[in-house]
Amino acid sequence: MQKYLRAIGFSSIKSLHQLDRIHKGIQRDPDRRSIVSRSLQTSLVQLDKQYSPEGLGISMVGESDAEGSFLFEYSFPYVVPGNYVFTDEIQVERMTDRSGYYGMIDNINLSIIFSVQNVSMITGSIWKDTLPAILSVQLSGLSLSASILLPLQKTEQDLLYEAEKRREDLTRIHMARHGHSDILDQMMLREMDTRDTIDHRVATEDVLSIVDSSMIPSGLQSDIYDILGTILQVQETMNETTGEKLYLLDVACLYYVIRVAINREDLVGEPAPGRRFRGVTWLQGVLTLDRF
Image (tube, rainbow, N blue to C red; front, side, top):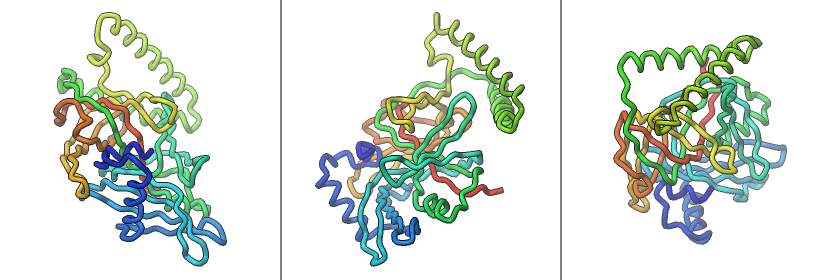
């Protein structure tokens, strides 16, 4: 995922030699260092370095032995999520090719998969066998190409109806997971009716004039989505090392709010609250133990 370095302002990094210089700087002076046991002989080490006050950074993951020597494994760019917390039953699966994790939220109609940012915390919890099924997650994402769309025309009554519908859907999803199969059948039938309505309308209308929120898997990577959602907040920031200008957008998509980072050069249109964001986004998440 090194190509997503562009989303946090490192568009000039084109080679492993350039990236290695960044890595050496992180090892010399990390903003945060986390060390957790994962066997009797070794520990996982996570080093984080931020390049803007708003939480755009690079995380290095590796291993240390009993003597404390660090062996680098991989790194990834990240953006710290906003203060939107969602508590749910979240499955955590280890990545097959590295010491990282995927988180998955099963929302009946779509399973949301994201890369876990706080690898060290999850590793420590798994080592201690204390990772619960109920977790809290804050979502963020990195995008390399996106556009700004005008909002759909909605009345205040439409907005109230949609907010109530989202609350009801979350309640139904919770009930369906806990044995209420009739609720699941009702949701599936309603989803089929909605799709039939959309299919009829797209024959004469542009789909983007009908749908204002969607999350569609994109490509072969399970944690990359084509996201369409409403912008709640816009922040302009800058990578303090490179000087590249960036946007942080809080995007309401389905049941979630995702903080998306994108290089200013890669966004078509002027972002503003109320307008819509559409872009392919690498989805990330920070997990914490259930707050309740």
